[in-house]
Every structure is written in structure tokens, then in C-alpha cells.
Amino acid sequence: MKTPFNTALLLICLSFIACQKEVSAPVIPVLEVTTMTSEDANRLSKDIRTKVAAEVHPSLELILWASDSLLADPIALDMDEQGRVYVTKTNRNGSSEFDIRGHRDWEINSIALQTVEERRAFLKRELSPDSSEVNDWFIDMNGDGSRDWKDLAVESEQVFRLEDTDGDGVADRSQLFADGFNDVVTDCNGALEIFDDNVFMGVGPDMWRLNDKDGDGYAEERTSISHGYNVHIGFGGHGMSGAEIGPDGRLYWGIGDVGFNGRGPDGKEW
Image 1 (cartoon, rainbow, N blue to C red):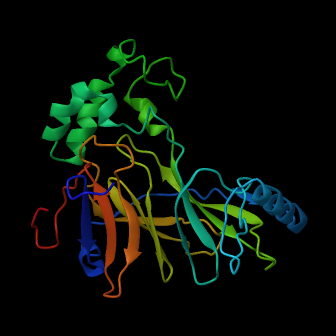
Image 2: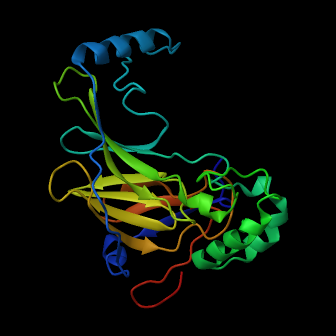
């Protein structure tokens, strides 16, 4: 349940975030594509629909547009002017998306954190290689024999683009649009909004602007237009979410108890 205590609505004007210090990340395109025949896509759509006990009004029809053969574990989605659907996906599990309720001994230190870099230092300290045996709840994601902070940078957040290429009403193509969001302090990517040729994705500690300049379906250009989110270790799923362009031309999204610490173009700290 959303309350003023655990959810604060952030208002970021596009002209404001455009003035932030831009940090671009080099990207090597990975054209990961999954396709299905029209027959297979429609067969799966009908088969899965029969197993879903959902009741709709007689004037409406419920159809499965895309099966998990094209995309699993979706979080946020938006559609562009060509009818293509962009969907964020997280590969993170309980070991790399922290929930303070599972680490009560971290609570006081977490509340005291003031910046993203302080969070980074805290995680490196708590998840040091020397504490590998103590942190037996953690998973050795990189397989180096040590359960430490390096395992936080293994799983990447991703964005996929789904299409109905033959116009029969069922998606038959999926392509990886963006990945590589796997820093030690990276959160799940719960915010997504498309505006003109820009794909805005909120994955703490950044709001990213993604662009596919060469038209190959992969965002080789990405820029952090606002930085400083995901300061605290709060409740799971309380990160950046619900991105939307308002009628005033501003970009809105929500964020919970993970917090924010950034500066405006005038140097004021928020």
C-alpha cells in the first residue's frame, strides 16, 4: 500500500535533468533476437489463454499478446508510435536486490547513508571477501569461490522490444534493446517511458536516456540524465517506478524509501 511514509513522488522537469552532468557508458551492441512463426505464436496464445481463469465483460475479449517464450519476468512496459512494446526485465534475485527487513543489523547504518557512494562503500565493507563464510546467505554469482560485493555486478538489468511483425494481433519477435546495467549499486529497473525517439529508464542510481541511433534495434547510446537515487537499503521493490511524461512536458516517476541525493543546475542539493 502506498503511503506518504514509504513513497515520495518525484517531479523532474526535462529541462532540469538535461542540465545534469551527463555520464555516457560505452556499449557493445548485442543483437539478441528471438522469433516465432505466426502459427506457433497464435497456438501458444490460445493454449495459454485457456489455462487462465479470468472473467471479462461479454463486450470485451482477453487475448494473450506475447508469451513467455519471447519474454519472462516483465516489470515495466511502454509502447512506441509503431506499436512496438518495450519491457524491462530484471535478472536479480534475493541475493542482489536487498531488502532491509532481511538485514535488521544494517538498519541504523542504512538510515545514516547520505549518498550513493556511501552505499557503495557500505556494501563493499559488509560484503568483503574476508566475510565470505559469515555471509552464507549470499550467492557466489561469479563462481570465484567467494561470496562478496563483486557478485553484485554480475546480473544485469535489461530492456526488450516486442513486435507483432505480421499484424495478426500476436507478438512474434523479441529483441534485446539495452543491457549492461550491473554496477555494485544498481537497483531493479522499474521505470520506463518512451517519448519521441528517447527511451527513459529508471534504474537506480540513475534515470537513463536510451537511443538507438543506427536503427538496429539496440540502444548503443545511453546517458545518465539524473543521478543520485537508491541511497538507502530499503524495502524490495521500492525503487524508481511508474515513469510518465505529463501534459506539462515533465517526466514524473515514483520512488520509495531507498532515497535520493542529487544536485540541480543551480547547484542546490535535493
